[in-house]
Image (cartoon, rainbow, N blue to C red):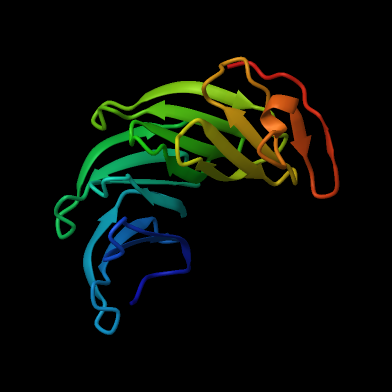
Length: 202
């Protein structure tokens, strides 16, 4: 495998035979890894003017999301990995994106931003993604986001050394973290202790 510059983002599709990479050259590359002994490049998509920080496959592996330092979110149709098609491109207004994650149903995308927010996007129509809730609670950049298997909870972690749990079933939920019952207790957890979290506005 070869690229230009360092690699900052990697993701496998659900079948484990397709790998996406992104790096400092602003390109997203798709790799055929069906045979690990003979890896080949499917395609290169050049869109970004800055570092590609994160890539993620949809649950059905037909869509790839990519985002980076310039704050641009792109959704790609990769049903033909040799010829990916950009379905949409949007400015996330985050100042830069560090992390993206698909909800298990593939209809919602979570973005972790340089501005300390977690932003939810409705992507049921990948050609017209729509910004949704903005989750505020982190005080510095959000570097990681992931959904639980049932999509009810979203977890985020950031440079402020906290992990926060968001109950997506309850728009009035508080950020929390630490253990499964933390969301109901309204806690936020840092590296050494948990404390009462303030409410957030959606």
